[in-house]
Image 1 (cartoon, one colour):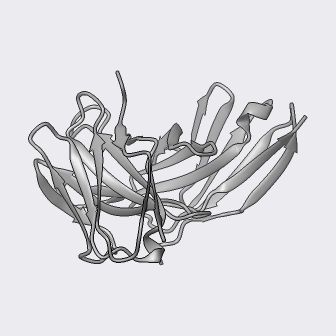
Image 2: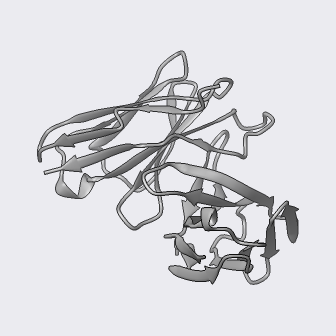
Length: 116
Length: 114
């Protein structure tokens, strides 16, 4: 089992550009959440996807958007990049709530975004 | 507020016990977690506790939960150099339907000296 896989692992963008990050959940998981971890901080919840819909959103602007595909994989898009968007972006997956193991998130290794 | 509070740094000698403390905020949180993060890596789940429990033991790890004070601790027995990492406490805030998000502390850096 490959666990949660994310791509790319590292990328560099300039201010104003757009970025797309990708996540494949662990086998058997259908719920995907995204977190932003700034340097020296704990992860912050961005949003969660289940059944291809955004189910809950954290305190992030509309520049952050996402998508979930029928195979449960997910993308995080960030438009009009700011220097402050530089961070490690973590994807986490879990079984849907009500299923065994739904309370446990499995995290990927993250995508490190640097905005210059 | 939303903050989960942790002390920032702990240094111990190899073989000693380590105790990492955390204060969370929401009494309706259903689960509380401890994650470990090594340099350049993602988060590894160490253990978790359901909010109606007050203790959980898993090999070298012991979690204590004081729900009245919203205080969570992680004890690592016989700490090894490989335990050096950042440890995050997190609470699961319930949400509607299938939702629920984790609120993390800012992490405690554990340094284990040989």
